Image (cartoon, rainbow, N blue to C red; front, top):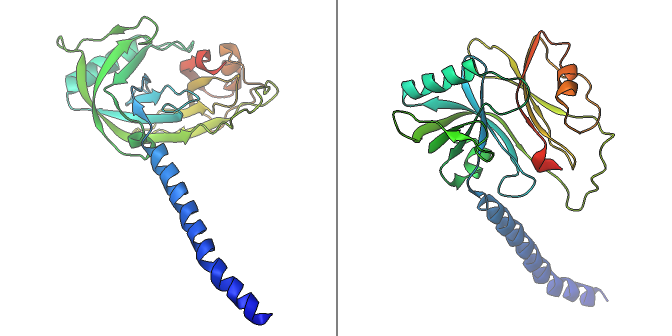
Length: 245
């Protein structure tokens, strides 16, 4: 019996090893496939904290847009930076409607998802580029080179396939981030997108470290303001629910 058992282990060992190699290859292949599947056009909302200019990726539930990402932008042409900063300062809104959006050339979003700092040809738009926004011109140029210089927030949307969309009773969750501005002018809060219905929202708040209670995941600008009523000041540069219903 002992001899038969040893023979059984001798036969089984290479099969187990082969299965292990197969599983590792499968996991590696799936990982590589996922990391090479986010090439596309990735629009972003543009906002400022008075000190720097930031871009927030406009996410969707599906690839290749399934990341919430915020980056500080850097400009090679200071005239372009000043023009954008001036427009943002003079047209501030706090009703969630985008003052400005941008659209880089086609690129792999994994570059930002892995905190790289690419330079991309980028177009800027007054209002939302997908909803009638008009392109900004910089000395008659529609495209400028922009460095996506500093990652501020990088979070993947993890939504289970087939998950129930009945989350109206859930409390909204927020990413809370210190902005890399000197001096720091405000704290950034980004709504954590959940299962449908949900919403994307960017909030700049001063004088507070945490968001207040926000019941449910249905977007309401008044409810957003109430959520941050304990802060010294609050601005809502962008809020939208259209793609998350």
